[in-house]
Image 1 (cartoon, rainbow, N blue to C red):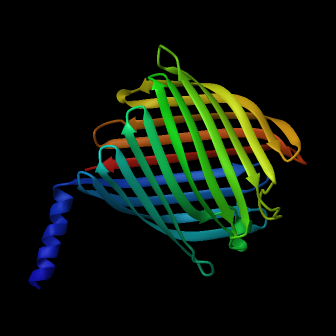
Image 2: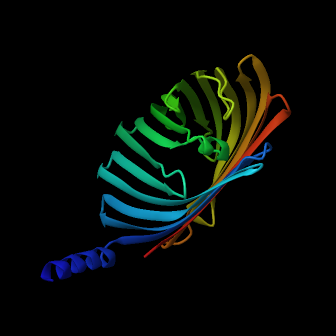
Image 3: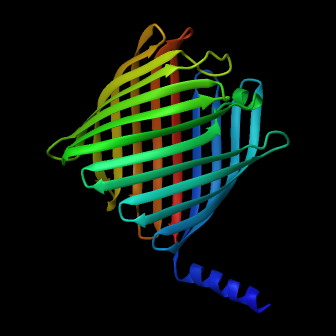
Length: 298
């Protein structure tokens, strides 16, 4: 009895004397081929120490295609640990529950910045391929990768990344990414150039699976303060080309993000993006996505 009372006192003291958050999140994506994904979550987190945050979220995932619909309950415990000022470790588990498939997904991200002008990231993700049809066949994607950012000056960033991806344990592909960002002297405008190259991969009729794929695009973006010095708007728009096997088509990309703290208690993040390309046999392929996060600290 005394042990249980001590545990309860310690638990209540962590709530009273540490940072607590109520978390809400909504995510969607859809395309002009009738594939839709919706995710809804609500949760709670607690900063047990200055460098450790533990939390859990619960909600639902809904994958929709013509004549096919998958629904899952989703329980997501997570942790954020910052052992040093320049090192961060974030991890998530995801337990999907329904009457049939009950997979366990996870992701881990480690970031490290030994000096101000150098930034490293390593990650691994084990997740659904992401459609109702691939869920029916229980296809899982596992991807691991590393990236490095270099800032030779305050207004120039170069980034390079490599990742290794397996789907359904037999479909293996690699990705290379390259990026350069130049921020104008007046700081609120930037130029962003990107390249993404995929090699390998076996054809599968249940998901997009070219033998080679590439995106090469550039554009202009803006960063400005909104409402308060802690709240920002980031807008980007640009274009380029997309290669799928031997097909080369135009590509348009645009996205907007509003994020930051309205008050010391309330923070939000609103994201919407759209891309339009012409790599399939039926004309252009239109894809859009969005996210809403609202968090309350107490």
